[in-house]
Amino acid sequence: MPTHTRIRMFNTQETYPNQALDNDLCQAVRAGNTVYVRGQVGTDFHGNLVGLGDPGAQAEQAMKNVKQLLEEAGSDLSHIVKTTTYITDPRFREPVYREVGQWLRGVFPISTGLVVAGLAQPEWLMEIDVIAVIPEEDA
Image (spheres, rainbow, N blue to C red):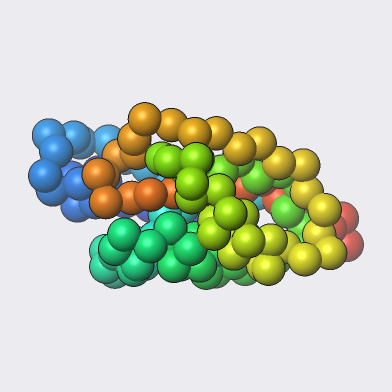
């Protein structure tokens, strides 16, 4: 019996047609009562970029994705225990963290934030990945 569930499996050939990649990945993995969510950006699940040039709008879309993936895995935003946020410019910190903070008000996760030289696509200004749990009564 599998010990984990893969959610929204995909191949990078579809996601990154402008790059010569061929990797099998998924958007989230539920392992026991833990959910690991792949880095989410300002792109919806149909491949449409939301918020070109706007880090706050990209953060909003990324958090919509996180919420949906956690719900598909049997968890929700209130059960996030760790976030890692990547921004491509230190000036993006306030709009990105303000948006993420609105989604996680009252949750109090641990958090790591990084400024990076770039992300997988040049138009992506931010990325966030999370780890969440599923309460024991639901696991």
